[in-house]
Length: 188
Image (cartoon, rainbow, N blue to C red; front, top):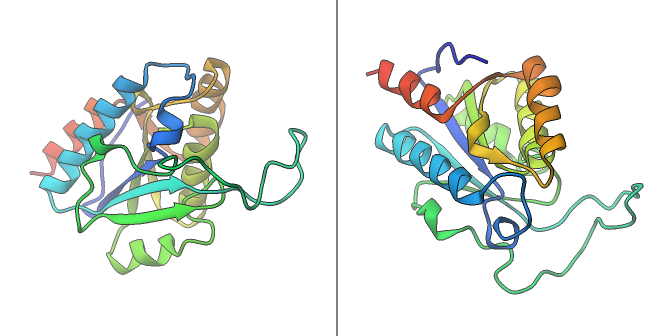
């Protein structure tokens, strides 16, 4: 696990840190994930780098072994609201997804390309779902991908660890939040 560098125009993508998800049972304390994501948000914003805040408001309609949970669903009021710790700013890019990846059907690739983004840093919940799907799509779209693994969690430790050990090394550089902050600081 190493973060070698960050491109001069990197974007931070924070996945599904929203009211309805942060209260779910998770493998790691959510406060740490939120704190580290917030530290990255501050660093990216201070450097004028793009920030993407993502929430989920549905899922694909296809059948799965877990049942027909996709498609149009209703959520409790406030369920999709981003948590206040993200301190949403007017210049942030907001993405509401209805799939696991923040890139699917949202126009995010084109928006990032228009800003000259060549690399993304992805944090959030859940490691093996929204984070991994977003990271995979970013990689397949030709972005360099960095994953600070201490700024994400999943509903189970096994899912989280599987993504980190098996999937992430094929699509990204991994490290810690501090590694990313150090790489940003090295840019000056």
